[in-house]
Length: 115
Image (cartoon, rainbow, N blue to C red; front, side, top):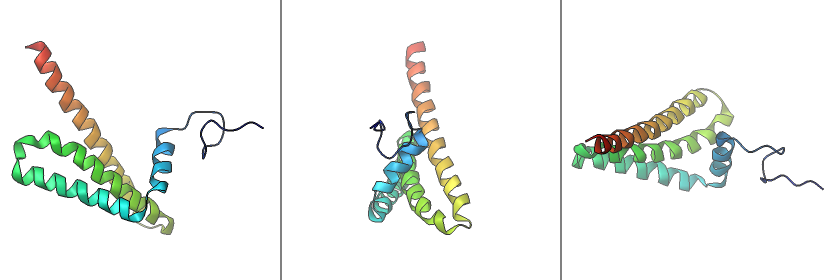
């Protein structure tokens, strides 16, 4: 019998990033999602209040908080309504935070290489 390469994913193709993230989100408990979201928000607030010059350090924390929030909204979208829109916004904020963090690192590295 032909077993799929990745349990939980249909077909012989590689799973998409969205499918992998959704699979990871389904394994986490509600408590884990809330703790991750709260830790990211508290860390972001701490960086913003205590060391605003270190704003780059807050970007991964925003992404972590966004992932926790996305898990929470993923479970709530089964009820429908505005939760789908909120899930999209939370996911977009997380993706933008990761993208901004990558760009900030790239500009720092290029600045060192150029000078």
